[in-house]
Length: 227
Ligand code: DC
Image 1 (tube, rainbow, N blue to C red):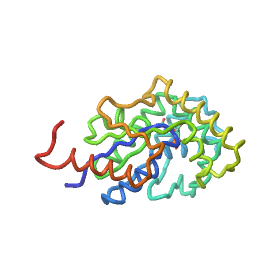
Image 2 (image 1 turned 180 degrees about the vertical axis):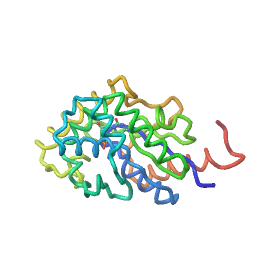
Image 3 (image 1 turned 90 degrees about the vertical axis):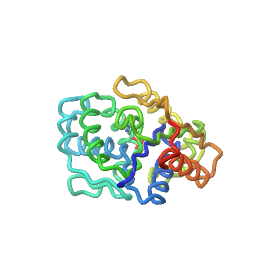
Image 4 (image 1 turned 30 degrees about the horizontal axis):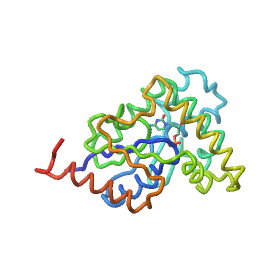
């Protein structure tokens, strides 16, 4: 058997990337970061000087964009965009295109194709609710707003600075994006009713990985399924 789909959702800075990567490595699964797709789309749109508010144009670009996302590599139309997609400008632009229903439909279709053969840990905001509502394992990660801002500030992929001022600025920007993600009408950030929530605020990474692996074991072992 090729493996299952493990859906990991939650807000920015909850630990999704770190946990999804570690769980995928332990299981020999592929790790798919769907946030990188919204970022890649926004990056390409800005590069082509397209209007981010033009939903038709954004959806068309989402459907044809040639991207390769996985194992720490983000390549968009042949360009290495790994660093370029993690700037404050792209944070905002990605949240803008992620609100557009036609963009979401195009990217969700691509995410379903990528996960169709199983054996993936897919992280995002709507994996357990909209992309793979039948995934056997759904995790919703969260952490306190302060801790999420602190993590973002010290994350080298989001190189912005670590002082108290930088953290306050990041906290404000995170709050804005959270609001955008939670209040949009097209697949908002939401905990699936059958997802297991883990608050990672005070938990070491290894503990969270262990909890997720235990859950995978429980939910996917033949004869041990209990719903
Ligand atoms: O996880 P991230 O910060 O890289 O995500 C970038 C943006 O894309 C963020 O505004 C949330 C949005 N997103 C989404 O709407 N749905 C997903 N499945 C993944 C990300």
